[in-house]
Figure 1: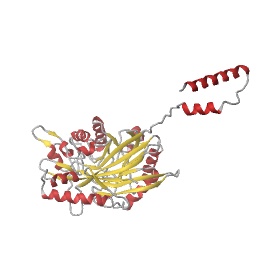
Figure 2 (figure 1 turned 45 degrees about the vertical axis):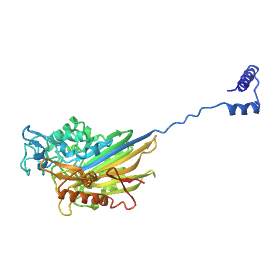
Figure 3 (figure 1 turned 180 degrees about the vertical axis):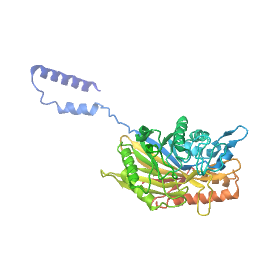
Length: 429
């Protein structure tokens, strides 16, 4: 500030003070003084930087442990199981996310925990299909592989009876794995699971079409979110649960239905109608499971009741992530996908989905392990002569490379994809 401006300010203060003392108002101030003050006095401008929040969610399909996996994971010398090798090749893709989800299609019912009838010969007290009871170490291995939340509502939820359903949740808790879809108490069942991921809030809802003929005991129906396609009232209950979640105003409502026909490449009319109803009830993202094969993705424009327009994303089936189900002609039970969604939220604006990533996966067998391979990365290593594999596996990997992205984009004719870091990327409009 120049000495001249300082002098003008002192004169101005004197005039205002004199005016106050004499009860006279100062009508005008010299324009010359005002202009020179405006030009030379620097007024700091504070620019508030926007707060940008980012989050990545990754999701896989059915996680199953058949007898063939049990035998390969067992060490006869130590008498211990381990499933670390199952996830070793895809672990970095699961860990490269803020939050990772899967469908746990088994129970931790303990040795001899599954129902006694129609169960194949047990291996060390555990069993695979048709009634699953898996060693507890699998929960620890899933957590170490990068999983954060598992949906537990599916047709195998009661394979170890109600006591096994509860024990499964206890084992998940012990391994810091969150869960949704089955419950120990009515109080748990009444709570909508809302999780803050990087400052973006997600509500999770999960339910199953059936329980392989098993039912909860009278008065304990709350232990599992079930949807019977032959009982319209059940559908209303599930839609009401989704609306309840939406009314809590999370950024996104994520619904995980276990539904559809096994081994069918495309959704049936019941799936399509239910997806419509779920979107109308407030769902934003729908991850389907149960068919054990991949079914397509669809991106919808959703007009909400208040007139706002949102985007909805559904994948009708994520396929098998890990199982002992092998490929049959026309039935790709050995293929799955790691699906990623990238989210962005600026200040208090509505969060948006920025992009979608797809990592095709393939289940391979060896004498030591039944494990999961990332298709594109594995083919790159084979082509660069850094890896050798049996011809059968190479052929399946080459098939999966093109089939997975083409099939998943069946309904996305207006969308393009690129290949980045051994995964497919689809920008969301």
